[in-house]
Length: 329
Image (tube, rainbow, N blue to C red; front, side, top):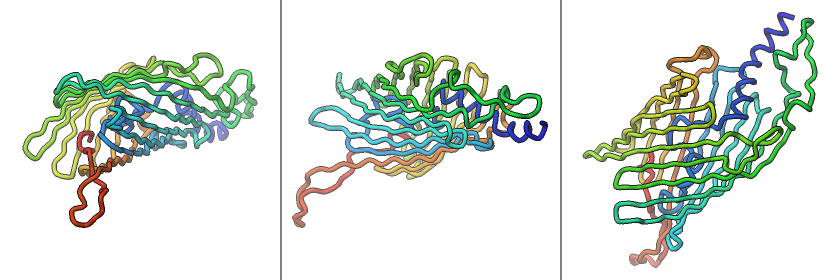
């Protein structure tokens, strides 16, 4: 019996934690702008023309079953309509891929210019959720009897293998000079109850300021996320000089009294950004030995097209950058 318990205990803790996270909490990225449309639909079209990005995240890296996230987004700003349109896809896989959820979000943003200095960006987002769970493939502590045998789970007490739901989010960004303030609320339409894909409402408030000083750009930021018992306060500073950016901050889970140090670095040009971010538990958790660090790799690029003179070559249309990834490090 001891051997059975010892063998299965290596998988029990990460499986339970992954199952609980998948049910009650959304992904919280290390880098505050790794999943822009996912965090606030008002970021749709923020780069001015076309933009695409992708992020890979791995969490609980020292456990037997890491929690991985795959995220992609694409959006465009249509100047004639003064509007932005975007789409994101996010897939979470935990417990060796046997706990999985996928979301596809479509967003619309209207750019409302109040004055020369103040712009408001209200946005709406519709999200399709799919969650796949099969608890009969897992063994939990209360299933193991005194002989070491496991008891088969009953489907009556657990979620079905696959559930689907339509959800909604809303967001708003206020841009004033170099100051940005954003708010968003998620899961406005997800059903709540037994055997459905609903999750608690999530509220996000964030702010950043971009300070250009000679050849250096400094971007202090703060973000607060509230989702039921999960409350995250993140703050830090990003710095860019030339084509290199780096920075970091603290990501604190307030209710759990857990503090993480988050660090980011990468390369950036006018239309391209690639970077790496990691975090590790600095204080407040007894699970450090197996949780390890989390890792994120992200890439973003923006581009657009405009008509220009043929400049003696008769080419007519040329590809030109219309925005800068540098505004979001």
